[in-house]
Length: 85
Image (cartoon, rainbow, N blue to C red; front, side):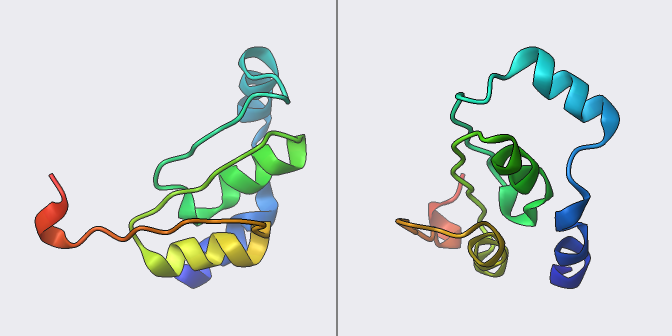
């Protein structure tokens, strides 16, 4: 799965996604993609200039985001199965 998402990072937004982003989200808006470890969308938002914080329950996906987006500061809190609802 990591290989699949790694290969998609450079794809950026599709044309329709770019149009929607331009219409509804300003480049100054901060974004929090939940489950965003796949990074394709997060990378596209970051390229556009949006401040972005990526979250994902999968530690390997969080690491993928760190590797490709760069992280200055981060706090990671992993929930165990019994804490999830």
